[in-house]
Length: 243
Image 1 (tube, helix red, strand yellow):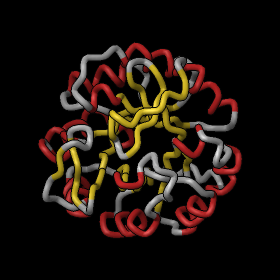
Image 2: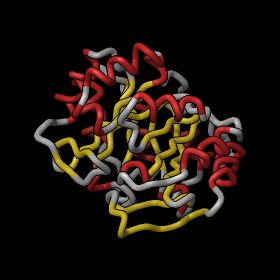
Image 3: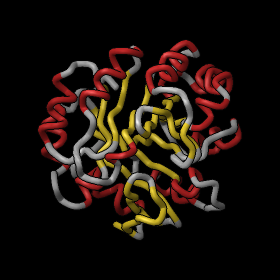
C-alpha cells in the first residue's frame, strides 16, 4: 500500500484546510519544493499534490510551482480544477504522473474515458469525495445526488482503474480516516481506492493495508503536525507498491 504525503497548494504555499473550507487554512511551508524534498528524504516515492486555487476556480500560478516540485524527482499525483484536456495536458507536461479528476468525473464522464485512452489508465484517477454519503464537487462546495459507489462503478465502466476517496467531514480534522467506508467502496467498485481525509493513527493505516483492498493512503495534517512520522506510516503500510 502506497503512502502519499499531501502537498496542498494555495497562493504558492503548502497549506491544509479543515473540511475543505478555505476560511480554515493553516500554512505549513512557503517553499513547496522544500516540503517535497523533506518527504522524499524520509522515504516517500509518491506525493499527492492539490491545486486548491484551481479547485476553487481562482486564478493562480500553481502549475509553475508544480514544475518545481516535479524537478525534485517525486512521482506526482495531482488534482484540483482539471476540467479540460488542455488543463490535463499542461499538468502532464509539468511532470505529473497521475492526474486526479473530480468535478469532471460527475459532469462529463465521456471526457474522463477519453483521458484514460489518451494518457493511459495508470495516469488517471477519479476523486470520489463525499459529504454525508453524496459526491461533492467544485472544491467540495456543491453536493450531488450520486453516491461514491454509483459514480465509482460508472467510472470503472469508462476504463478508470484508480480512485481517491475522501470523507470530507474528516478532512484536516485528525479525527480518523473512514476505514470501513473506504474498504466498502473498493469492494463495491473494484477500483484501486486510495484513502484520504483524517488519517491520524498508525492503526488506521494498518487496518487499510490489512483489508487487502485499499491501494494507498494520503496523509496530510497528521504528518505536518507530527502526530505520526512518515517512516512509521510507511512501515505500517508495508510500503506495498501495487497502486
